[in-house]
Image (cartoon, rainbow, N blue to C red; front, top):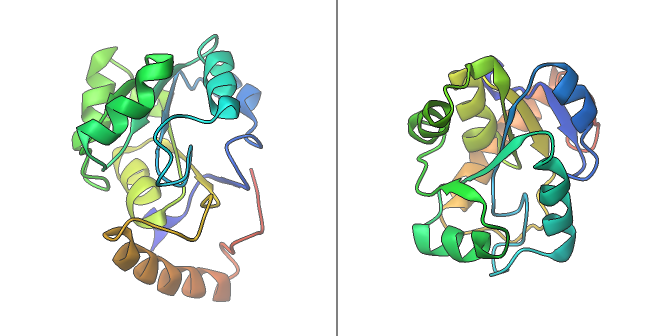
Length: 172
């Protein structure tokens, strides 16, 4: 259960304290795509996402780390030439390792940002990254995410009961 607890929890990617991350020594930001950066049926990044990533690229190396297909992610990343890892197999370490090896990042220099406990947070915690949970942009999920959400909701009930984590109660 401990590996499902994010280091920080924010409403959205726009609420994250990126200055704090920089001061902590974070060099690499890994964003989940679906329901973190964009809705599952958005083929191109919203203008607001483009502006944020452009701004963040001045201080961090940014990547898209997604379990989705290469075709989906490459099309999404085209407008801002983002580096990405598709079919990352989160929560396994495959995708995290690929990014860590690119610039020889220490795990403590990496931060994963996503909307799912069972993939983004569990994977990041297992790999030793700083983890940030954000609320999903929509309740509409990909078909294979439905099972993850069911298990996630069971875990969230237990974490809420223990006063550890509750949806809508944000913290740094």
